[in-house]
Length: 277
Image (cartoon, rainbow, N blue to C red):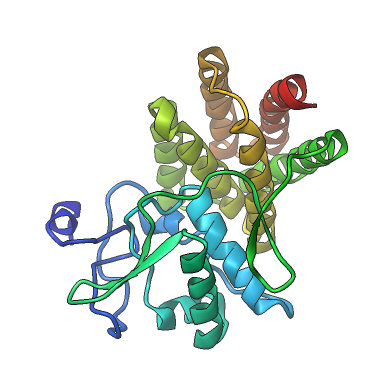
């Protein structure tokens, strides 16, 4: 099914066709761009005893990192539960919490379902004791430094292991496409596509745990980066660094991929320290 067909269906999004509330079909449409290959990056099995909290976190990361955009439709509860390997009650409670917090909306009728809200709440958030979303106070200097160290470790490690993996032609095409779309992004869309590229690199490492670690890191880093404006020279430099990282991964040069990623994240770290620490 083509993207053109998707555009002709009300409220269709990258997760598939619009559906009626209560319907439980598979993911029917193949969207434009990277599509399901990236929108579902974080909707992977949850491990551990905090199913509700992690379900909220995965959905929130998918929204706030721009893997799903305003107006996009989530898969039905049954599919989400299968993807995350949690109960439908857990998924329902997580969705309800995010509806209350303003991130999701539920629509009724023929093309009803659960959708990303048209306007996403801004600013940092944390999960409260009972799973509620709370506004987060500004980071302290020590917290900023902690975020930056953690990011350097997980992202350089992800690039290293992505380069050691034998990549399929589809994975190679996805990576190159993500790089090109990020390099050509408008200022308004840059942060979303940049996050998507970094998450895709983490996925290519073959470690779902590492993908979640990079997602957690990106959430915090983006909260810091949103405190000051995008700087055009930095974006141009980042695009050059992205090209070095991607080429190192595609040629299987793990040491070069890790070093290029380390240099890349250190540039952002310098800006963050300069503006905020």
